[in-house]
Structures are given as structure tokens and as C-alpha cells.
Amino acid sequence: MTLLITNIKELLQVRDHHITIVKGDDMKVLPILKNAYLLIEHDTIVEFGHMDNCKDIEANEVIDATGKIVLPAWCDSHTHLVYAGDRTQEFVDRINGLSYEDIANRGGGILNSAEQLQNTSEDELYKQASKRLTEVIKLGTGAIEIKSGYGLTVEAELKMLRVVKQLKHEFPIIVKSTLLAAHAIPKEFKDNKKGFIDLVVNEMIPAVAKEHLAEYIDVFCEKGYFDLEDTARVLEAGKAHRLIPKIHVNQFNAFGGVALGVDYNALSVDHLEELNPEDILALQKSETMPVALPSCSYFLSIPYTPGREIIDAGLPLALATDYNPGSTPSGNMNFVVSTACIKMKLTPEEAINAATINGAYAMGISKLYGSICRGKKANLIITKAIPSYYHLPYAFGDNFIDTVIINGQKF
Image 1 (cartoon, one colour):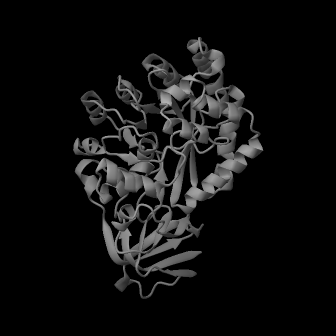
Image 2 (cartoon, rainbow, N blue to C red; image 1 turned 30 degrees about the vertical axis):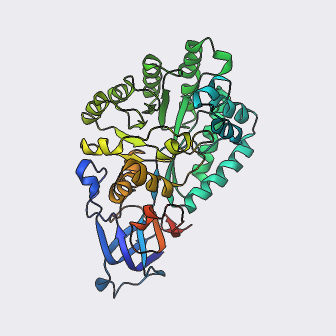
Image 3 (tube, rainbow, N blue to C red; image 1 turned 90 degrees about the vertical axis):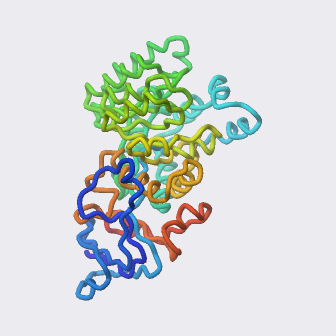
């Protein structure tokens, strides 16, 4: 099966070599080919070029992209897409003056989601999650990472990750799974945090590893949740079971979590709304990807990750949604890209690089995803007819996606 896209107004993120990460000043560069074609065989990009060189190419199907932009599908490296119900009441509570911490202290937040999830069947959980995944694919997401963390018991965490595994099998996009058992301290362990960490280390991690349900291990390293010692213990146990470290860090406080993540060779450190010079220095000496979640800052009215400072320090940056019921009830990567430009002062080029090639790096898949390159997978967005790619972040309230292609097939 071959698919030929012709008359492309702008073909974005065109790379002749298998670039896997973009850093610093290079993030300002977005390679573009105008008046282009792109040829797909089965699930792979095999050729692209100027329309003048397309005359003798034949294909089973041809898409005329006159006036349209083609770019790699978004790579969303941080979501909590598998959850039960919603937390709309907490949304109203915040409007009425309660903080995220206030809500958590009275049993809301993550503990609220955990209670709902524990009382939801695996079949119903899959039904809710599959609807959300369908929606985000239609919004242009072509690769996604999904975390557990709303179970907080051995069986409920396994239930979440089994749902993620089913999504992997039933949907065409690549899905990466993360064990985030250390997301919050359950009510029954309120005065025994060490006992809960013992459970995570001695029971949850081995059980998940035995069923091969996760590729990554994550911890919410934050005051009132898990400190540096707790985080190190969980990451160490995860690595012993061949789970690659990631960390939720610096969302509300900066106290050394970034450096700890670097020490454990974390693939990514995510949130970073609070950042200090020591964090920047630690990242400069690492291969760890900083990940910003601007939709979370928008929804909670907290500071935005200082993306300008990160990039200007010569570092890479990825963007992701943080899709979850409490702090970001949206998986719309288009809004993330716009918000990064509007609130974090990223250029459109930097934001698109952060949401494609660097997002893929933060999932360990940038050798095959995240750019237009011969031999990479054909995960693409075809926009509607628009003036230029600047229009994508500029008109933040509009949906300009015409077609999404996943593994060479229209979704």
C-alpha cells in the first residue's frame, strides 16, 4: 500500500538525517520544504521532495494537499489518560478560592481520583480511556505516554496498567506506559509513608515488572508527597526491575529533585514550573529532557515553566499535555503549542520542535518518530488550508487539522 501526498504548501520538520533531539539555538530552526510531495509505503516515509520531482511517482492513493501544511504528528510524552470520572467539583472549589494543596489536604485531588478508580471496573475504565485516546488522536497526537498513579493499591495500579496495555493492542498509535505508584500517600498510610513506599518497592514494582506492564518508573517528587530520599528509593527499585526513570518535579517547590533525576539518568524531568540555577546546571551535564506542561499552569493558575531560560541555556525542551482529571482535563496538543508561544515566549519553531522531535525523545522513540525523515514512521498531521504554520499557534481556539495519518493509514 502506497500513499502519496502532493502539492504540500509547507512540509515541516524535514530532516535528511535521523535527528533524535534538538537543543538550544537549534530549536529556533524548523526545516521546511515548500511546494512538496511525500511518499509513504505501508507505515514508513520513503521519499519526499519538491513537486517538480514528483511527476513519475505512482501510488495506490493520492491526497492533494494544496494550500495545506504537513508536519509530524504530536508526541505527547506526559499524560494520565486512564482515569475514572472527573473532578469538576474541585474546579469550582478552586474558583471559590481553595488551592490545589487545600483540596488535597481535605481528601480531594489524587486521592479523590484513586477512590473513583478503585470503584470502577476494568472494562468501564477501558471504555472511558479509549474514548479519550480516540479524541486526542483526532487532535493530532501520534504517540503518547500514559501513567498509572490513580490506583494507589497493588490491584488498582495493575488494573490501570492493564488498561494501558489493552490500548496499546487496540489502537494504531505507539503507547508508552509508566508506573507512577508514588503519586500520593493513600489515606490508610497517612501516618505511615514509609509503609506505603515499602508497598511500592516490595510489591507494586515487582508485580508490574512480572506482567511487563510498564517501561518507565515515575515519582511525584514534591513537598507533602515524596521527598528526595523517598524518590531515590523508588527509582532505585524501578531500575532494579529495568524500568527507566522519569520524575514529576519542581511543580510547586525546587529542592534538588532535578539533580536527583539526572543522577539516576532519568529520561525526562517533567513540570519544572519552579526552577533555579542549580537545576539548569544539572541538566546541562545530562542527557535528560526537560518537559514543560503549560496546560497545567493555565488550568491551575500557577507559574509557567521558564522555557525561554531553559532553551537559552543551550538545553532541549519538550512539551506535553499532562492530560488528567485534576490539573489538566485536556489532551489537546494544539493548545499546548499555542500556550507555549503565548505564555512561555517560545517561537513557533521552538514549540513545534518541542512537541514533535523532543517529545519523541522524552518517550525514547525519536529514532522512528517526531520528524519527516526517510525511514521514519508515517505519523502525520495534514492541516486545513491555512496561511502558514504560524497560524497554528496564532489562532489558538480553532482546530485546523484536516487529516491525521497514523502508521501510513488515515485515522
